[in-house]
Image (tube, rainbow, N blue to C red; front, side):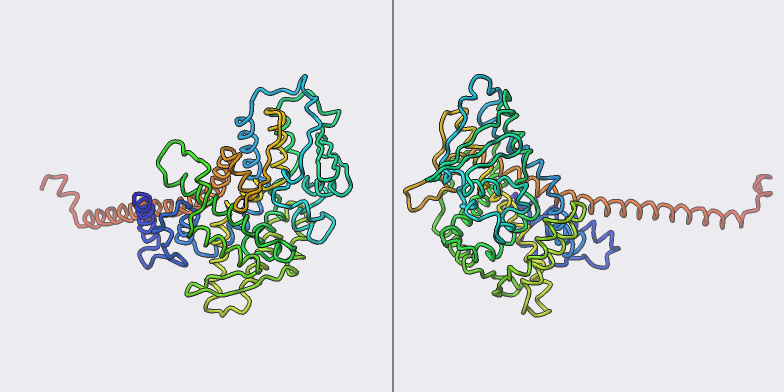
Length: 467
């Protein structure tokens, strides 16, 4: 209960400050339902959104979303640095290639790299631009092409060669030698983007509406894997936020699901597989579909425009997303639906970003390279089990690094929202201080006027004579 009480106390303090700021006419509650306060779930993002609405209004939630997506180049560096540090700590911080470069080439089963079947989408097709963004700069687009063309180099670091029946040979370029393990990992991550805006928007749209994967021959089982990963992220956030211990222990049993969790996962997976989005109307649930073709222009802009104009393209995408998802919804419910869609995306953003990172073929490839160099062999994510997938096995085999990545991503999202909340709170504090100073000034002026009036009625000459 202390977790809920802490949130209630904070809201109470803000409510008082906001009321004072507004001179007590009314407290702007907007879309705030306070469900996030009563919730025992560890995810603080819905609570932060409610605070933001209290301080400003519901429209601010959408504005902050477009700002966050527009600044991926800033916070992506933080995420990548966290992955590099996690890999170095997990394997070795003194590892050096001198004398052991004969470890290369490394041979990998492509199925143990492409654990989410991304590389099966050709970078040269219409679908490719959604999954790879600017294909010429995306290492996954290069890997996808390698599976058909056979050979390619990338980033001044790697040479890739693909041979049937599914072996990816990874080698270092002759010009890239005598580097430390950390330098290889860091240079590799610096050579590519893992959270480009266009690819992130694709993932957001697909994770929320299923509109892309449902028309690209993805199976129900594929959607099931995505929902299992999302639920795993929720459980980790909940444990890290609500458990008051220095270090949480994660064994394989933690990554299993209860009957109710499984039913929830299967239900959402089926909705996404059908391409149906169940929108919250605020007073019930409505069913809607998203037309993929309407996003063509937005994605073209995001991939082609100058970086300085990315925000404009993101705003266009967000407006198109909301417009498409509210077709046929009455005006009395439209504002609620628009807010609920953006709030839902915010709530699930840590899971969406985690999916982009841990199922990214390039990221998995880097873990496989590290395993080969440090431990002398590859990780096998394949399974004969009917209940485990390659993604689930990846998480279980690398649970330490995966948990660290999830915590870092969650922190990035929280800090972004917290900075906005802090900014608005400081405005309130500044107004309160200004009001108190103004009140003090008025009191001082009143005292002077009163003194003047009194002095006007005093006979100064008689005072001097002591009469």
